[in-house]
Amino acid sequence: MQQVVLEIKSHFRELPKARDFVREFCCRNAQWSFDEEDICHLELAVHEAAVNIIRHAYANRIDQRIVIEAHWFDDKLIFRLNYWGQSFDRDSVPPPVLDGTAEAGFGLHMIDCCVDEATYIQSEKGKKTVCLIKQKKTPESCVREAEEVNI
Amino acid sequence: MDFDMETIGDIVVVLLPGETLEASITLEFKQGIEPLLEQNTKVVFDMSRIRFIDSMGCGVLLTSFKRLKDKGGWLKLCCITDPVDSIFKLMGFDRIFSIFENREDVVNAFKSSD
Image (cartoon, rainbow over the protein chains, first blue to last red):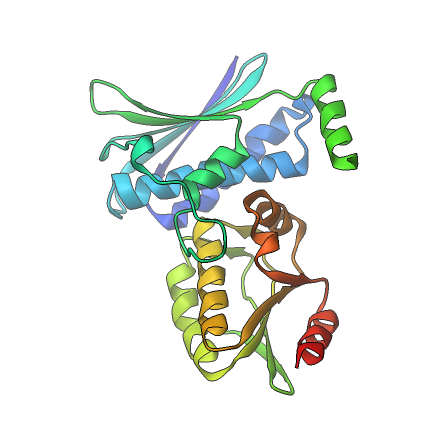
């Protein structure tokens, strides 16, 4: 397993650092065959998770910590965003309205669309974690994707 | 926030500035675009420079879209980059916005709907 860590402040201006971190980590492990679209989706998922932490967990305070860990396993890639603000109940958030009448409330849905699994964890010592998991592409999944595009 | 604009008849084409439309600039974007939405009814956003958009960026586009629609106007988008196109398709926003390949196509579409 490989692991890399980035710490940023809870400020929107720090978000490009988080996206660059994701991109560099994915590109460093090119053997995983993530394409440009996969990398864009991972960048967006981590970005959206960090935005939620800044806006809701830290109530827009700009001097708080967000520690982002990236882990490579044999079968998956995991980004963990650790923070120490207000806890978050995923089930309390209603599903997004995507018919053009709503102007907000898309962030969590974007995360769900961009990764294979998103979980929200609270530890005993006040640390909270957003865990984003992307499964490794296999030759079979690549063929399946190509077939779906051709349908 | 400054916008490069081109007026073609009663259509205003706005080149969205910067490479991102995201949380850090949406407030500034809203304030900058407000007078333009107030004064016009037919608006095109040229998104050729935008390489990254997040949920709040999509939100300000939808706000602009609704604002113009509510007063009988239209917002159309053109010159979408691949990363933005991917996000729109992921979220289904490609079915909400009228998206055109280039400025000429979108201006012609406005004219034909008159």
